[in-house]
Image (cartoon, rainbow, N blue to C red; front, side):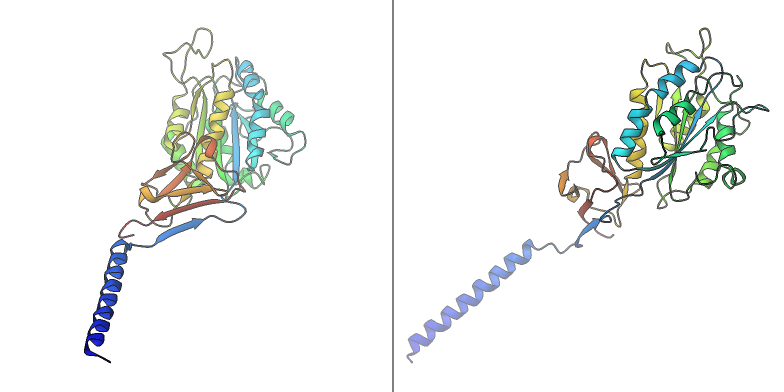
Length: 330
């Protein structure tokens, strides 16, 4: 073999090796040496805790019949929407009449609470809501709700309604404020102790209010008197609940907004680690969902959660997947 051939062959091998090393070096510059991507897929069948216990407080004082009937007319749509997304619900109704001999402080109707398997569910709930207006005019709705959530009641007449692993949704229909003895702060403490936060971050109860939201508007408590539901609204603000006017010609939007808020919280997902937000990709049943606070998803860095909104809210059996790159240092 000639020296020229050996020299040429060696030159070729060196060139080949250099090309390989340059190529390897180029690949390394593109390699992400940060933390690996993370994929969270939430259970294949039930994607979130779909249990919700709904306690509705109906003001049954004078002048309330018209509002009860408006609320009752929205029951069919409300039940259909709850069923459509696969919620497992218990619904009980109490009144604001806590005087001696009044019907407050206990679940009204028989059976004491309704579920998605109750016979004649819609008509049964409507009859409880349209309870009439012969109750006390000193409304103590919060006291009534607190009374039925005491262990003594839940272990007796109210047994079966309250579930430790269910979200608690309190719904109030009234055209006045509350006159219970307990302060708003002590009531908040009671409900916080009754329902500790889910996953250590998200409140496990919510107050939703339909009533007089301001005395500056045209909505009156009665023909010549206005009283906003300040105590109820304080608890709604504390829990992130909705506040809706009772004086609208229809309560369809009010009831729909309450349902939406409940599902938003039920379908909230807490991520295992902090993400690089720009890398988050969310899919429901394989379809990519846009980041959109109206009809999509949003990320809350304080609680490290993804929440769904509007038409993007998943059903209880939908397959939800969240992919993301973990933030550096997490």
